[in-house]
Length: 132
Image (cartoon, rainbow, N blue to C red; front, side):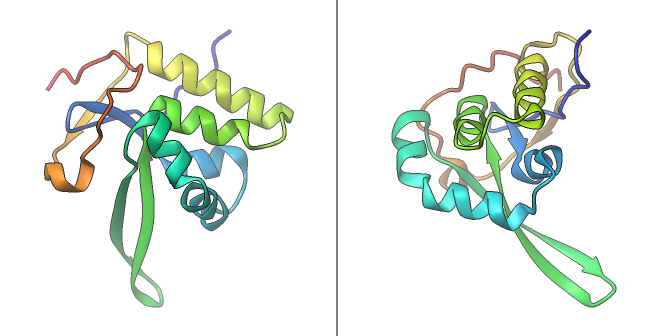
């Protein structure tokens, strides 16, 4: 039985997953995953292309809040998971990511970003294209 699928988005024709979703699936605070991305950014970008950083403004009970996150291609996300202990939860997420990347029934949302923000220099192994 396949696991539930992760929402995959197409950003500048590159299929990516939101780092906040990965943190949620790993049951860790996003700030810890965000720091792991920052700490390993050079290695990640040399091997798997540029990380797409984003900031979202959220209206919270305490007012407007800026949330920083990353869109990661499959290789980047998988690499980050290899830095974690291979717990049952991490193994399930790896399976979920691999299944999501290869599912022919995925729904892709298309979000265009200026090339200078995305600037990915290598296409990930994800092969599905947005139907939009």
